[in-house]
Length: 529
Image (cartoon, rainbow, N blue to C red; front, top):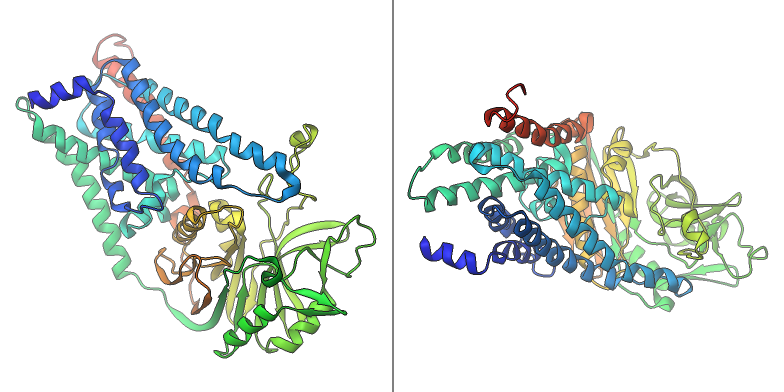
């Protein structure tokens, strides 16, 4: 023990750095996600062993710089966009530096503010206080409008017992359980290395964590969902990226797309009720007419009448084809999931939660001459599902899969959610893999099946508990077939009723409660309480 303490004094920042490196290993391309169960143990031991606030700040700062630095490197530095918006693309890459610094400093300051006299707290109180880390992560996620690839909940999503917590308190509760479990294990290590005053009260947080995990596993095994019928789907996943092959063209008034025609023929051989092509089959917007005379360049790439003729020739009339398009109508651009049947457009979902710079350029950015798109999209207003047979389908467009509120709103009257999107603006698979995890979390939170459809993959069918039933990996072309059950009674999760805010209030309110309790016990302010 004395040797360990001597080593610690020589390298006090080794523990937070070890935690940061452990978290990095849970992420792609390493994917050693089981490490998440112990990755924060070194950081916990560092914070509660260290008394010097300067050392705590510096240690947590190192932790943040390493972890968020890696995240920024594999996301923002791999970002690509349309050539016309080169200034925007450059700013995205440069923004990685201030983002990393800001998040690291904010986390270090928050941890320092929460530091209390460890001798005045029981192991359970210390463990829960460390859970404030979950609230910090929640705040960061709000700043990035759901895109927080550093969330501890992502690695935990691979563990069904922890993922199930999302049905109770969303990703906030999943993260809290990860932090709680790490802190409980750290308390157990503290007990093992103590020679004097060994207090077995560490068993309380460890027992609480084990009990909750055990109950969540048991519930998933004993619960069932009754169904009466089902529909079949086929997801076309094609990794072709060259413009001449990846998109169709209008030639002499007729739409031609040999690659998609081949894929649709393959899918139709299985007689599915729905074929999903999770991309736009053409370059440009879908218009009411194929008329670009009002624009300085070709904006409209397809009109409904021309595509309807192609549908009649290549898609069975009883099959619904789903595409993801930009629709220009009445002078407005909509980001849509479109449902086509028997040569006609029979239904649409217009994206409601628009993402700045991806769907529109904010006014403040335009004033600085920063444009990310040649046009601005408009937010839809209706969450009404689309019906195929007895199955009601809700929709999530691209970035909406990262937003729990979208899944709650769009899944209220739906049996299943179609999460259709693409991460083609990134040069690696990291965002693709994380949005599949997002789809698993949305399924767990809402209690709805989620069909994740992505042109470049991974595409997957996910059940109401977030388990992947079938999957087509990233960068693999093919067709994913599956059946969607029609539920006789839709699940109502606790999260869909109360969301994460009650848990957030309790968690954030816990820190000042302990502080006041400590003041009272220390008799500095005996009137407190």
